[in-house]
Image (cartoon, rainbow, N blue to C red):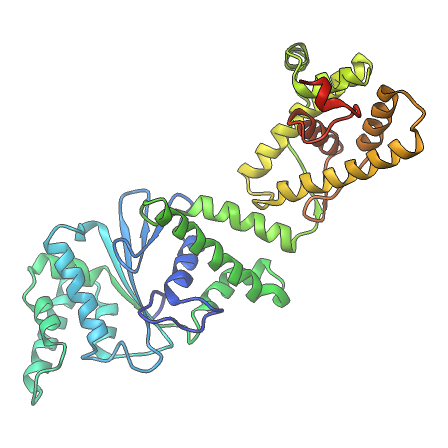
Length: 382
């Protein structure tokens, strides 16, 4: 048997139950255009863009063999799939089925399910199950579930079995995640990254449930957030931006509308060319933030940390200017504060940022009146 799938009891999987682990695995391995749900159509389900679905039952079989020939786990799963197909909950012609069991278990009948590829295989499997039942001295506890399978419409039984896989390949289901992430993740942080990925996947599903929505997580959205997290914690270096210098007409238009940060520059009597540079960097910084967020280059929440860092620099500079240059006019003190802030170069997630980004970010904060250059900017801007 090869491949993967779910849970019924929590297991010691980096502190997570099996379902979130499998949710994360599928979000990392499915096509970018797919979504993955938890406890919706099945324990975990992958929803493909072409309308097909992979239904997965995940079994944590720490104390029993969930793939034994007369296992209730095995036959109840199959019976539920038959029932869903019969009542129209699932279109069996557009569904794939998977039982995932951990730790590694085997069984003769489950292997026959896994290996069936055509109608003849399904007929042979059905006959074999019937014959095995006749040879038993007593009926198994799972007989009601077995009968659901044996009495199912032939087309439904054939569709389910041909599209069914049994996966029991790891004693630890985290290993499937490790195999996906090993090529790009240092060994010393691999489990930490795995745990974070599972946590992000689980939180995205929980957030949807809190909003009274189906826990249907977009693979692309998950990967964007996960990749940003990995970059923050594992990939130092330079944050590059593809945001170009804004057109002069756009700069002039915003400048003419006199936004709050331009009014702040007026209060400290900065020259027009310096104000135009501020407008250009402001526009480019906003475009850069949008770009980084869209492609997952920066982890969610890092921009708040970034802003807090800039505000600490600003408050320190402002206090020093007030003490050292107390004899100077207020506008002069404001210009000194502003000019010193424009020379700040602060790292974001431990990575160097483009030159425009610090300057532009200070003006974004000034536009929100979270800081100001003139000592009495709050009174003067009323």
